[in-house]
Length: 410
Picture 1 (tube, rainbow, N blue to C red):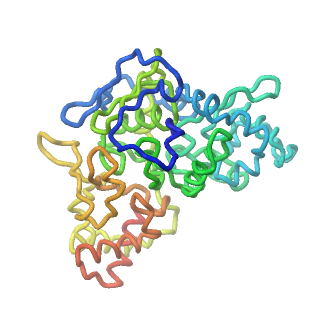
Picture 2 (picture 1 turned 30 degrees about the vertical axis):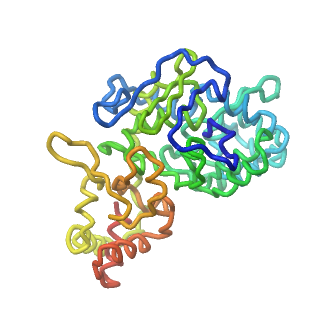
Picture 3 (picture 1 turned 45 degrees about the vertical axis):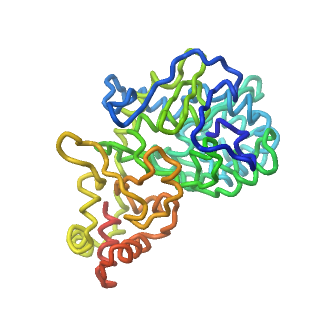
C-alpha cells in the first residue's frame, strides 16, 4: 500500500516529485520505467493481448508482486502478527477468512484469541488478501494481494468467514489501522493511518503527503468501462500497476510524468508481465444483481424514465455501462468533469493527473454504500438530493423515491 512510509511526517514536499524505489528499499534503479500517458495509447493499455482468466484469478487472490519487501522488510508485519493479531483481532479490522481453505471443524477446534491460529490461517492461504510464508509454525514473510481491498466473503459460516466474493469492495476493511500496527511507524504516522476508518484508503498519501482517503471502489462490472478510477488517470491496467508498485510495495516499475512519479527497481519486474491476466479476470467479474425482493420493479421503471428525462442523469451516466465516454475517434475516452460542474469536493481531483472527475459507472449500487469518492453521500437518496440541488431539478419526493429504486436495480 504505502511505499514511502516516511511520507507521514508533518513536513511535506510538493506533490510533483520523482520517486525512486531505491529510496525506500535500497534497490538499484537500473531498469527503465514504463511511461504512461493519455495522449497516446498507454504502454499498459487494456487492449493488451494474452489475458488468461484462470491465471488472473490466482494473481488477484494470491500474487503479492514481491511486496513482502514492504510488508515484511520495512513494516515488519511478520513480527506483529504472531505477537498481537489473533483471528478475532483480524476480523475486527475487517480482514476476511476463506472458509473453503479450512478443514472441517477447524474454527470450532481452534483458539480464535491466539495469534498462533492466525499464523495457521496464513499457512493455509485462508486470510483473504494476505499471503504468509510459514516454516515450522513460524511466520517468516508476509505480503498482500489485490483481494485485500477488493474481495470480501459471503459470511456463510460466520461474520467475516465464508466463500470469497471477488471484486466486491471490502468496506469492513480498515487498511489504515492495519498499517498502523507496524512498529516501524512513528506516533504521528500511526495517527494519520488510524484516521482513515473502515472502507477507506488514500492511494496518494505516500506520494503527496496529503491525508484525504477515498472509498474503496468495486472491482467488478469493469467490462466496457474504459477508465476505472475516480479521476480517470488511466485505464484499469494503469491503476493496477500504480497500486501494485506504489501502494502495495510490489517489485516492479511504474512511471507517470504527469504526477512526477518514477519507480524503477532491479529486474525482474514482477508486476508488468502479469497485468494482462489480472485484467482478464477483473473483466470477467459481473456486477452482482440486487437480492430478490429488494427492488420495487414498478417504481424502478418509473425511475428509469426520470433518469433519462427530467433527472438528466443519462446525459453522463450512459447505458449500458452508465459511465461517460465519447463517440467517434475518441471512443472509450472518458469525458472528465471539473469538480464545480458536479458539486464535488475538488481536493482529491487536484491531487490526480487529470485534476478532474470521471463519471462513476453505476454498478451494483445496492451493494457498496457510501457513495461519491469521499463517501459524503451515505445513501442513494443522498446522491439524488445532491444532484437535485446541484442542477436545480426540482424533483418531487415521489420522483426521488422512484429514481432511487431504479438506481438500486442497476
